[in-house]
Length: 249
Image (cartoon, rainbow, N blue to C red; front, top):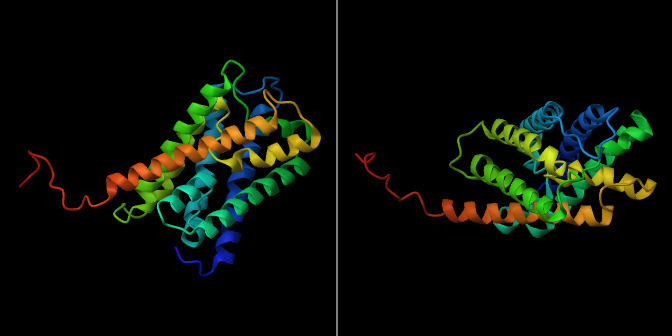
């Protein structure tokens, strides 16, 4: 990716992250209203939340993908840097843009909705799940998302036009599955903004922000990097491979 037009790419990434975070976090707050549990457990609630996140990610990819690539996650940006699709400078700038989008979304939600409701946007593991299991689950989530992105959006042999649909549906599936377990971190745009407010207002979580933030952040990056390297290995120099019998002519 060329650094030409980096300013417009960053504005695009901020807008994409903001749109997904604003409506996604807003759906969490709406679903959480009146529920005193640290995390939602209803499959119906998480299905609704997953659809909002997935549909907004789908829309953002089709709108902003042609400008910035619409990474929406530091894990994705770092995975693309590791596989030499973007530069180190772009990676850092993209991550900053994504976090800015998350903070702006959380700020507006804080202004629009009652102060008590913003706490429901926090990402926290289910009280019955320990932090090690949370980390492993989030690594797998980051891995699955990045693997799909590499296959449908980054690979030059990918079928054109299906990246947004494939990634959006994957986000939905991950949120529905991981939501009741880990709170569905997946990407820092989901939790960075709310965590900023947690630090400012001292809201209580299952674990302190300084524990949860690096846990989710590192898990996302680890899963994404493994997936990016694995897919790069599988896709490299495979054009000459013959299809196995009985598909050979």
